[in-house]
Structure formats: C-alpha cells, structure tokens
Image (cartoon, rainbow, N blue to C red):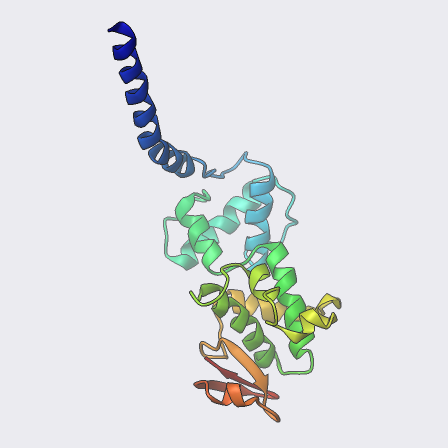
Length: 218
C-alpha cells in the first residue's frame, strides 16, 4: 500500500514539475535583462555605447565602462525618444534603442551588402538597398535576422558571387546607419532589380520606388 501511494506521489510531482517548467523559463527570461547605469561594465555596456555612437549621442570610444559620458548620452537619447530621462539603460530604453539601431556586427554585414550591391548609386539609393534587407527582417516571409536574410539561398547574387566580402567604404556604413534609424527610400520594398533589365518575375511585383539604376518592389 505504501509503495503504491509513494508511486502516485512521485508521478504527481513529475507532472507538476513539467507544468511549471515553461513558467520558470519565462520568469528566468524576464529576469535575465541587465539594467545598466553608472558603474556598470562589460559587453552589454559596449553594445549600448556602440549603438549610442551610431546615433551620434556618444563621441567617446565604446570601452565597456558606464561613466558620466555614457549616462549623458543615454539621457539625450531618452529625451529624443520621449521616455523617462534618468540616464539608466533599462528595458524600455534598450528596446527603443534597438528599434533605431543595429549591432556593430550587423552594421558591418549591412554595409557590406550596400557596398556590393549599390556602391555606384546615390546615397538614397544605397540607403534603399539597406532598407530592403531590414524590411525583409521584419517580414514574415523572410528570415528574421540580417545574417539569415543575406545568406538565404539565392537572395543576393553578390553574396554567392563573392563581391559581398569586399571592404565597404564610409558611405556604405553611413547608408546602413541611416536605414537602421528608419529611413526607407525604397518605400517598403522587399526586392530590387536593375532598371535597365528587370526580370519578368519582378515586373509582376508592386513597384514602390525607382532610384538611380535600381527599381524596388514588393
């Protein structure tokens, strides 16, 4: 009798642990965010500083040390974003910051595709190419990271052809930053093609913009 009762207790505990696991994981994820303020240091601060530098709020190097300059930059960003100006990089501030910036690694990837695909185009034309990549990231029809969008099979001929690996110039980086801030001359474009010889498939799309040698569509 005791063995049977003990067995049922063990089964009940197992079921309870399984049902609680998702809640525990959600709680862990919710508490894993690191709030940054004066005195904080490390890789999270480096990323914060890089994003602030990208927007022009911070001129100092991203050294991973949250000091008065970083605090001041956070306050200025918060003011521009219309959120509480406390100089603390909490969850709301970082969410707002990530909406208008990309990580340094993603910025480099974005600048590479801009340079490879549109280095002879106007600045707006280059921003438009970067915007197409970001529009794809936001679309349910494409992968949800910049890297996965760029390296999807057949997505960009300059990736498969190797031109993507050329070192981008300063203009390409500026165009990538401008697109990350929300500028979109492609007007929601998800594809681009040569104006001089658009494919039959491309002609079936809704054309959103024509800039220089590229036509954009979705």
